[in-house]
Image 1 (cartoon, rainbow, N blue to C red):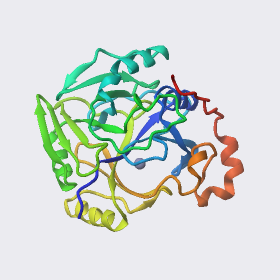
Image 2: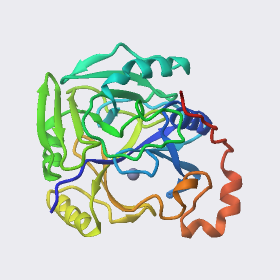
Image 3: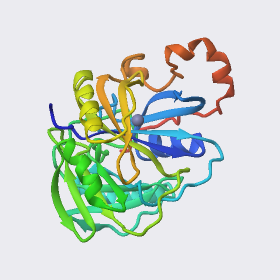
Image 4: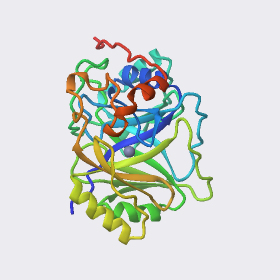
Length: 317
Ligand code: ZN
């Protein structure tokens, strides 16, 4: 069995769909590559943002519920999502974000890389991590951010945990290796792939569990190469005493889910079939896509969803 290849996607709760699209597609320059609905609740959108084609490890997804109250970040939750940026792009990003009214906090150094923290419109903590490590992504050339400064996939995520050892055992099952300890932060590194490699555990005994709501992460998903390996992981997790869901068809990937011992929802998703499954690369994200089992209800589903516009973008000089 191959070690897990890193992060596949991160899924977050949001409030206003338009604010979400404006921020990720226009401000961060992450292409809206799929407009669909929550397969478990077709009254809600599911937006996917990524590089040009939806390379696993670049994909951030949102369930935007208009009017949803903010959640509270606590233990058993993802505390921050970090993207890679080139090391010379810190000034570009601080200026760009400020130009859109998004204030960044003072950059600081963590394990030799500068980190720029800020928040999305719902208060989700994001970090830009400056580093020039290889990042295999497909740049969205029609996007607003020139390639020299564009985000280069996920660096990783930080999870708030009560007991790091319990989550570390699950990461060990997936082939993650400990890569560093700094105070109450322990870093784990995934295999093979060059983006979405890091899981940091922030141990905070005695802190309250989080509360799901706008601006909090619903789950994080890890990459596995194919269906047969996913089944091997399903068995491995089950043997380790984790309660794992059956395989679910998410149209663009196949998924299994379980809660790790500190409470964060983990998913293991296949790379295939991918986001070009139901539309060509040129028009990704521009039309509402529904899985076959909802197609017969397209008119009703579409009418009930809030309207939004995909912002027109031009590339910065
Ligand atoms: Zn997912």
